[in-house]
Length: 256
Image (cartoon, rainbow, N blue to C red):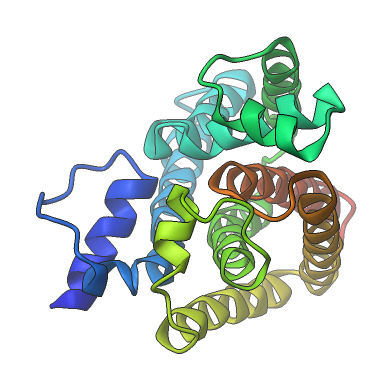
């Protein structure tokens, strides 16, 4: 029963999908992070539905399809990860000491850099989605919503935590290295194997890109913030999804 509650907690925290309400306890939260990839499954399935029923069904053109595909992850998650991306970008662009950067993360107001780079992010997403016109590319992208969340969860557990009282710490503190890590590793391995099966070149490129981004994330989080936070986890997830989007489109259109 605690595992079911853990799944509901993860879906409640990381998506806007209506879930049953109950009091969150430590026993249930202990396994919640294992289900972080679940909203990614929902987003991936929805992206495939958009592609097959709207785009291939010729109900929309490339522009409208790209707009809907760009907005869909925000609609499912409520923008929780994009909020972290904006806050982190604001703090990084401020070029301030660690303490000041952590204060910027806590500021509920959006700074100029956050607005600018959010705009850049959505323009890049829209541009890539206009070129995602094959089933192979969309399947690779859909699977990427799962792998990016699995990696974000693993990083949250194993990377140093900058804020011991933050929301991320509340999920990682009781998380054991057993069930949670096994579930996230299994999800990442299964999705990566499927991506390589769809396209060996694209799947391998994604693994290389994810490894490089993860290494940068570790170095940047320690140097600039003293560790990871919930906002930084959102930043990493959004960057990973953008990278996967471009690798998928370029690999498939390149004939790999």
